[in-house]
Image 1 (tube, helix red, strand yellow):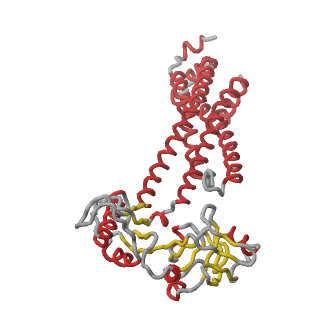
Image 2 (tube, one colour):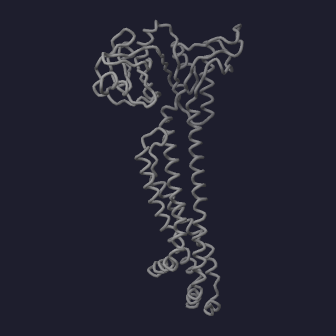
Image 3 (tube, one colour):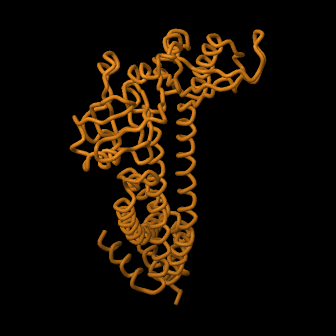
Length: 406
């Protein structure tokens, strides 16, 4: 073992410049692979964060305009969804429907205090909207079932709006705001970079709108979803039930607009896998120059040590011993410079995480232990491939000819 280590060090020291330049190519290839993998993982994590499995288990439905005549009705008829559609969808929307909720928007509503006011709109929602709308609570709570049942006048506001209305977000909970001629209690403060709507109980919002029954959209929660066939089946069931209730053709795509979040989730998973595969291909192609360089070094090393190899063969060394020695040297050189690239790549991904790790477009772009293990395997395989042909050449050296070699 010590002999192999000594010979590896001699190979590295024999031509320092050549070894350093070749090692730089290997390190650069691994460095680029780690950075690209970290960035692709950050993009994937960002997509997962924005479209988690919990949020993706919903179908969003909005009313539209009919594009076909049906049962005596002409095309171009307005279809408006109603709160009364919720229970039928739960009961007859298909085997994949678990539950349904609705929301209603009051865009013109102004929320004010003695200090200031905001006009970002008010939305009447159910408790599940916290997940759908990505309302991450910072203080207090979101709308709950008791608020819905008792038609309470409570409101959940955005963190930036809380600072504007009260001076600080943490002091907003429990205080009062004016909206639509009524006084509301702030139940909670949420954070969302792109959404500033204020949330109130769905039942209270419907009461303020005069109980017309018309809602903005319906969110159908799905169950037992596994593949695209399930996504299509769930969407057909929802559309068919709404078509039955509102008298439009079930194949009229414009009558209601449907956003199948689960279908998007499956496409996202496929896209993430393709992205990672492309990154690996780019990284391995970048390493190609390093592989060629290491292979050339080993060819030169074998040629320069032909006499030595002949002596070893003459005193009983077997071809596999020579093969193992050359491969070990190749793997060691590749691994040494490869891990330098791994270290520098990890440093860069940590910097990226500090700068952008909490953003919506590059969330947590760090490499984990699984990627480190994969790269380790790549280094070993690449090193073995780089040394394979020089090693085979070394095993073909004939002792008698090698001993005459000068």
